[in-house]
Image 1 (cartoon, rainbow, N blue to C red):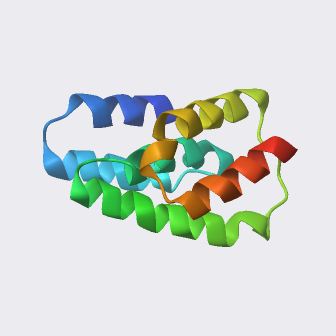
Image 2 (cartoon, helix red, strand yellow):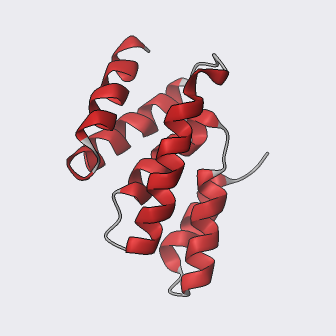
Length: 106
């Protein structure tokens, strides 16, 4: 099993730009529900390069959402809701409305 939290820890603790960006790319490439909490954070980042990667991943996530009908685990859903609350002011209104609707249905 892949340790997303370890990669996230590396992302948070490094000051080396290329390592930080690579961690973002890895976390944005995680499976469907594992990635969403990270993608929202990165899309809301004040660092333009991180935000660009995050927004690209957010668009990709939204456009491929219905390809699989897997449901998030309780833990995944809890983490996604935390990210939603923490970053909704910094994300597009369209995405926030859409993901808010999805989260209500889960």
